[in-house]
Amino acid sequence: MFDVLAFLFEQYVSLDDYPDRSALAKQLSAAGFDEDEIDEALDWLSEFDQLDPAPYAMLDRGELLPRVLHPREASRLSAEAQSLFHYLSSSGALSAGQRELLIDQLMQSNAQLIDDEAVKRVALMVLWRQGNDLANLLIEELLFSEADVAMH
Image (tube, rainbow, N blue to C red; front, side):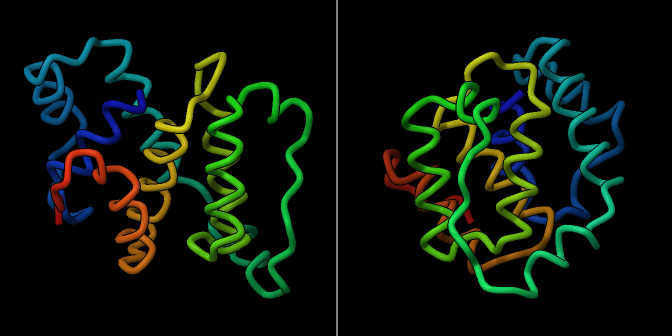
């Protein structure tokens, strides 16, 4: 699922650019993704679009306090993923609401162990779907720094 999300970011600069679900599924299949991955990613996007942002936005009203992972969350995130999550949280790349949205969306994954690449990709999607350009630059740098190429 996480690879599909990264592919979508690379292909579509704007949320308004990508086609309907069936056309997108065909494109993803032609790109070599398997049907289960495509369905999981498209379901994730659909559920994400239906989320009420108000409860998350309410978290942004107060001071940004450190986030301690619940043992169930920590058990699903690799050590590198936990480190990246805490870095994104403490660096200001994510607001309190975005941080909670990120962890909620990571926990929706079927993956038993979530690695740092998954955290990067889901953080990117959270920020991209919210239209946060400045934070996108930070996430984009994290995602594509190894390739030494800017995608947008």
